[in-house]
Amino acid sequence: MARKQSDYLAALLAEDEATANKDAPPAPPERPVERARGTTLLGRESALARVASGEVRQVTQLLLDPARVRIWPGNARSYAHLSEENCRELIDSLIAEGGQKVPAVVRRIEGDPDHDYEVIAGTRRHWSVRWLRANSYPDMQFVAQVANLDDEAAFRLADIENRARKDVSDLERARNYAEALRTHYGNHQTRMAERLKLSKGWLSKMLKVASIPDAVIAAFASPADIQLKPAYALAQLLDTHRAQVTGVAKLLVDEQADRHARGLLPYAAAEVMRRLMDAPSHGIVTEQVERYRYTNSYGRTILSLQSENRQGVTIRLHAGTGADAQTVVDAVRHLLDHLERNGRGIHQ
Image 1 (cartoon, rainbow, N blue to C red):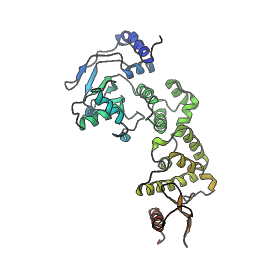
Image 2: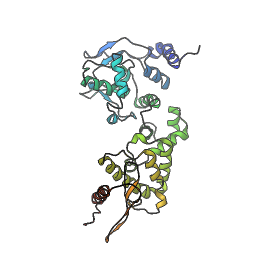
Image 3: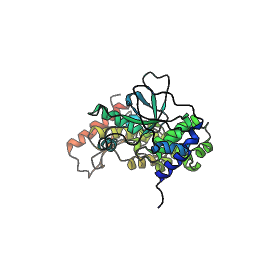
Image 4: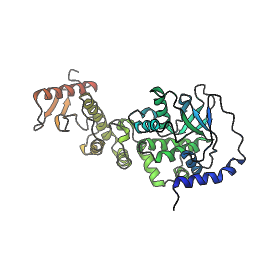
């Protein structure tokens, strides 16, 4: 019977452990507030790290107060975007299993009076344990293994874990790669691709996606909606039609805000991408590339801005939408608010 990959990794780690640790200096004594657990060889990240780099040295597994552990900024995952909602499955698992079973990987830090370690792999586990400690589980501990890693090895370890995570968006990974290219690889894409064991073509596409400006990203309801294939096409379009695409993006940001204010769902990522990719067909290179639209909950346009100049504003009321008089009045009011926010109010 073929062995599972996890068994193979564990066996590989166990086989090399004696050699890897023979010349390593003894680990410093742990601080009194840290409760030690027995060393294990089955930690998922430890095995992955050993395969990835060979620089990892496994030491005693610790039970830590998550408040004393910070997040390494080189990780792709955005800690600020984690929430009870997107960590709910992990939170429920921690409760059901009576604690964290898969250890995170951390490294010791110096010179920070508020923290003793930083998380290299295990950001969601750290967030979830902190949330549980603040919500009826004050004794929940953050389980971690300490690894001796330089920044480049830490980046590769975090990348291995993130590749298997569906909740790390393509945009997050792309921007993480772009930063790592500058920080760890001297802007040498070939070297980076070799170290990460990635194809140069795929890495090049990721780095291209990272170049999409925040002003365009803001048109989407969430950065997590942005996927590699359409985003790469959008990034290429920006090379030749930046003004048009940026103009449409600005209008989309306003429309998304209006929809949110009216309690409507935001435009889906596919609709946002379609309108951005269609921007060059308008043939205008101003912020008015695509005129303002007011839509109902079904996406049908009730009102659109046709033109605006010193003489006034021209709008179009679309037939066949089923909108009543009050809805039309609301649409006009939202249009006026939109013009005012952009410094183009009719009283000016």
